[in-house]
Length: 105
Image (tube, rainbow, N blue to C red; front, side, top):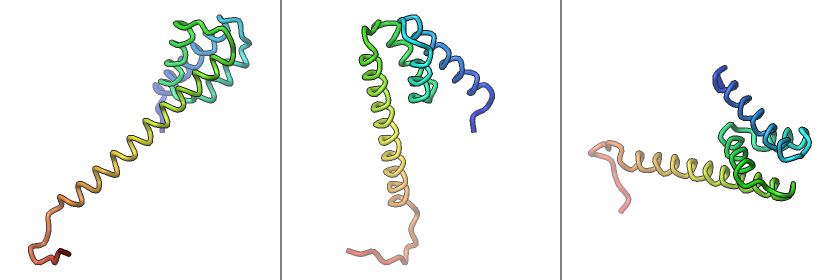
């Protein structure tokens, strides 16, 4: 569960993202939707950096970047799941064995 400090950082990131959307001339509601879709602090900060640096010219560009960030995050999560599974399998193979254990050959 997130602690108060994590919630505070997430809320700061959310506010910064909404502010960046508004500075581009879009309604606050658009920023709220983008922030809610991204969800995480790092994703919101990445999106805020994009908005401030790239200065997108349409809401479609903003939505495309949001989807790209979500896709990158999903790939990262899949990679971490795969790495943990591989680590577990490696630990299983390298476990201490009973010297009398029969092995299939």
